[in-house]
Image 1 (cartoon, rainbow, N blue to C red):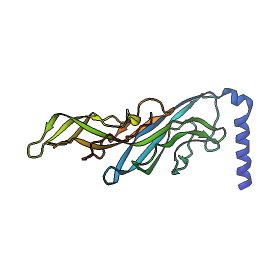
Image 2: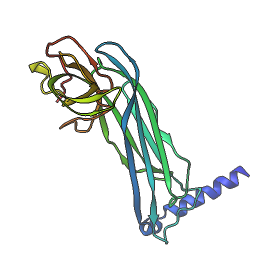
Image 3: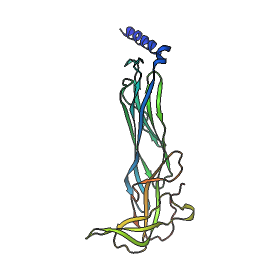
Image 4: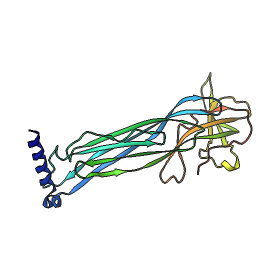
Length: 246
């Protein structure tokens, strides 16, 4: 019985691979990828340092349309989506979706998390994915590469504030500038406002952190999420060595 199945499978592949059949096959791919902006949660914080857990997510989805005279019998010929996230500290590995017919809707996602400290240098994470065919291998793929850092900036108040809310407990947006050493200016993360309780006694100085990321080829400004994830008033009135990776 097993031998008969193998023969039938071989015949099906022979029919599929005949030159006439290959000429008749016209593929139109409708695939896309989705990469969520990385997010964080605080693990611990102490003074001018912070430890974060960084979360990544990517997804491949879509389908192929094929001309009616193209024969790709399922399950002898199948397509499937795949997704992968790789970081220097480890990898989620290539995660593959289920085998499906060549024109079926495909979808596969991958997620990963890793710890990152404010003392760490920027890290690289590769988020890629695609779709493959049992006969021809990958026929759709992408490779966006992400650079990530936990940025640190010392913010100093200029003496003005706005946007105050609350009655018993009032908070305001204090106008600030990034108080960094010449060699680390301008910092990757510019801090123009810090929201804090009112009133604040001088000196108005805060240590600020944020998760920054940018896509390959790592040029231009960083995009930051969770800016001022942790900010506290400090009595050190000196320019700081801020995060500076232009």
